Amino acid sequence: MNVQVVADPAGKLLWISPALPGSTHDLTAALTHRIIRICERQGVPILTDRAYIGAGSWVTTPVRRFPHHDLTAAQRTINRALSAARAPVERSVARLKSWNIFRRARCSPNRMTVIAAAVLTLERQR
Image (cartoon, rainbow, N blue to C red):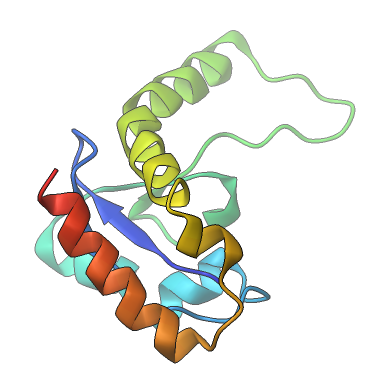
């Protein structure tokens, strides 16, 4: 199951996307749900992992290391800063994954969408 998450810089979950099959690539899922387009219109910067490389100029991704080429010191510093900024969001995603329903579910994406909305509501009450 592929579920996209939007969180604020402090890691507070703001939105969970409808579920898509697990074989869906992260970038395809983000484009399907128009997350990038909506954030760009609202002026909200997007910090992501390497799965979103090529998503456009509005999306900040880590600098990619190519085979047989090391990153420069500046590029490593950029990657570290991006990872530090994304850390609270990654903790939120890890908290979501702690729910057994997300790890053991074998139901349709439609049903998981309803479950994800319920979990988001419960997480907001924490």
